[in-house]
Structures are given as C-alpha cells and as structure tokens.
Length: 172
Image (cartoon, rainbow, N blue to C red; front, side):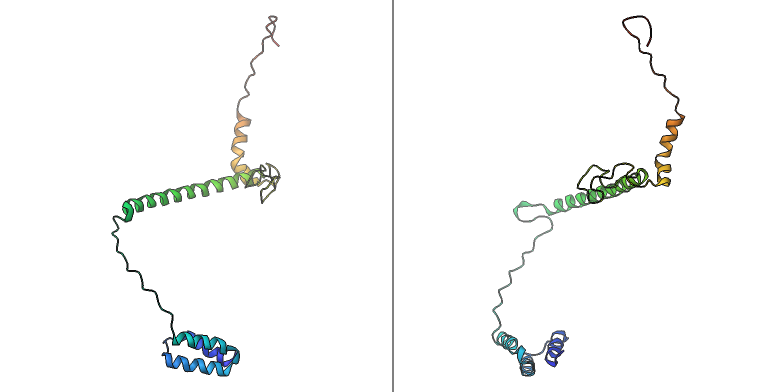
C-alpha cells in the first residue's frame, strides 16, 4: 500500500477530526506523493473550500402517543399490532408442530415429506414421492402405524350381511 493510501486511511480512521487547514495540508501531501490521487484530492479540496449548503432540518413535531394526524388512535393500533403478533406466533408454533408430525409420518411411510408424491414440481421428489417410494423408517413405522395395524388384526371380523335374492326365498 502506498504511503498516500496509508495516510488517507489514517485520516479516515483517526479519532479526532483534523482542522480544515491541516486536512488541506495532508491532502496536498497525498497529491504530491501519488499523482494518481491528485484529481480526487483536488475535488476534496474544492469541497472543503466551498462546502455544499445544508438544507434546513425540518422541525420535529411532537405527537402524543394517544393520537396522530388524521384521527388515528395509536394506542389502539399498538394493541391490535400486539394481538396480531401474538396470533402470528401461535400460528407459527402450530405450523412447526404440524410439520414435525408430517415429517415423522412421511418417514414412517417412506413418502416425500413435502408433497407426498402429489406435486410434479416438488423440489424434493418431483412428484415421485408417494407412500413407499423411499425406505420406510421401521422404528417410526412401529411407533405410528404399528398400533393401527395391531388394532386391525385384533378386531373381530364383521359378519357380512346375507344378500337375499328377491326373486326367490333362497339366500345368495
């Protein structure tokens, strides 16, 4: 790094703001040491000599927290915003819970956790992730599906009702 660049960095990083005279002197030194920076230094010196006019700051208008222009009730809006934020958090927590449950069930059944094979534009499976498309997680299958299978096996067989042929008195 050139000494001119180092000097500029020192000026920019310096804790105290140098006076306009000392800054002008430093800029002149930089321009002499590195002619490539001369145009930039010249612009900076012109800016120092003729600073741009600063626009008048707009006076700050103090508004009460109770009301704002156009009849807006800020307290009511703040309360409504807090309520909406609370509802959004509750919905987000519920979505997280449902996503975790969906992911577990998809893993237990070997399905795509995003679309279950119903979306040909799915970024995960491109629509090929129907149940059984992926390796089934046996532990999750036993935890989730096992009790349902057990219930089906233990359930007494229902007796099918006899169909009666209306043309005669015999059962089919």
